[in-house]
Image 1 (cartoon, rainbow, N blue to C red):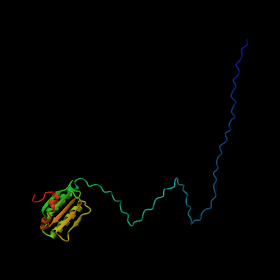
Image 2: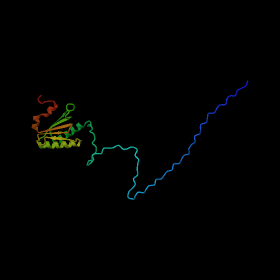
Image 3: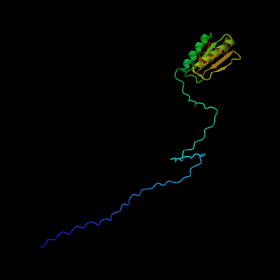
Image 4: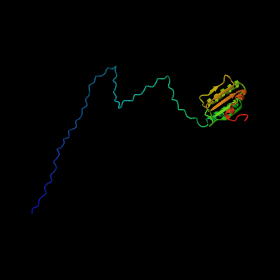
Length: 187
């Protein structure tokens, strides 16, 4: 018996060899440029990645003011500081029959109403001026004073505190502290 020799394995056909092209050196060419005249400078060109967004021009103003801060709520206790300052001024300026009415939770008009009596219209005007100064020192920006020309009833509005200054006969007539305190006289 004859033994057969296994058939020789065929080698896969060789792939044609890729010839690598030699790397070409790129020559940098110098572009001949004319030299500009000495009077005109050459501006360099810059390439921007992205165009900038267009902004609206700001309105022109004479002087720039700092941006206004948003209004913050008054810290707890400011009405009490205003009330105490007003009571101190009324006492120092010899106001009579001073009454403080607490309106917190009862009215949105103010937290305190103070009622006092002065001897004359001139004294009421002076007390009103001292109250305005005291309120402004505590940071009240707008103090409204009404009734100074007549001098019978002067109202000082500092927001959280309202002060009524009366001459004695006008105070008896209007009886305003009893209205605010809900405690009428004669009852």
